[in-house]
Image (cartoon, rainbow, N blue to C red; front, side, top):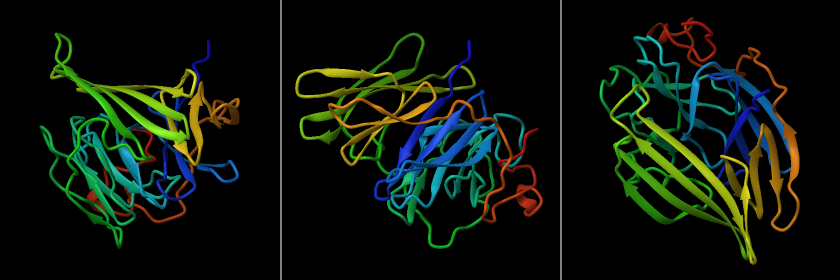
Length: 286
């Protein structure tokens, strides 16, 4: 049985684009740029690291991606995890922030020029940031908690926090985004943290579309709203749907396989920057 690719995305708040992450096999992620006006999908760069898409962000104009990722191997520069800023649909970093753990790494954009990131936690790696992007400014982390920093007009409608014997704490958060009059996209987010094991956090989402008469579950871990439509993925396929109409398949991303592709812009590299000689997003071996 072939396991379908896992596809998630981030919709730009102002530009008609969506960054897609196609994952599969494990620790192989392809970034793509979905042009929402004409459904053209631009394949970008593969990365042989784990990308935490739920902790990443896209500038409102769609020109900069800030993402949290890691290879979880020995690395004196990043400690195994890092936050990077790149140009979609490429992972090659123009700026790199060592993190060294998975307790934080949340990041995002306030507007086109201001970004924030949280690198607090145990065992922080000293050094960095590496690289510089003219015109971008780092600002303090906004007051938020798991699930509240979601772009796209989402609003929180319910929250439950609990403790149990397996997890130190679990948040169950309900979010809603209006699609059209009488239609609402619902998101149920579960986020758990534990003090045991190498991976201290886990999150997952469920979605449904609620209409005037009933609520339809969507078989997806990612869905978002854009101009009166629902964008979502199912079994490695990218789809869009107008409320009350059948879903339309835009592309099947399952057949894609790993291939190297350089970014069309200068970025940090092992060869070009002695300070990050142990790191580059296209490295295949550690």
